[in-house]
Image (cartoon, one colour):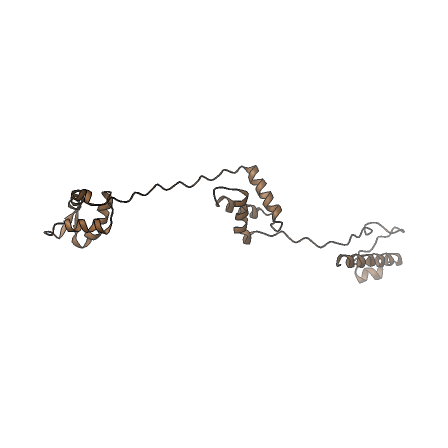
Length: 197
């Protein structure tokens, strides 16, 4: 083994103590430094190891660390259970677009990266972690006036005018078509008023 320069001995001592199973405390390092020969400026690793060995019981042992417990294995979640949990979460959060494939992917990824317990509560937490990135359920369209009569012809067999008939269509219409249109527009106004209450 190579020589240890005098200016690096303070770096080599803790490593040699550790290798020998001794504590690298300041007290142990001082004992080793005092035992080194002052006759030389350079020491070998063998010489340093022999000094540590000769000090024997005068050096304190390295602290024994208790073994760290292994983290628990993640619980395996079957597809049926995952689907059931996802359904409960989506039912409880109607704002989440359940038809979005990306939402399912994001929630599942956050759930699988979460705690190993993998319960419904972990899925709820996963949803809250990714909620800013989830697509929202589109707002429902406002209800439309049920114009039931529009598809049926008038008594004389003529077609009915649509509620949004243009001015040109209204001018070209027969009297019976105009009267029917006005009646249906009044029904729509009443319906709209009832919806806005």
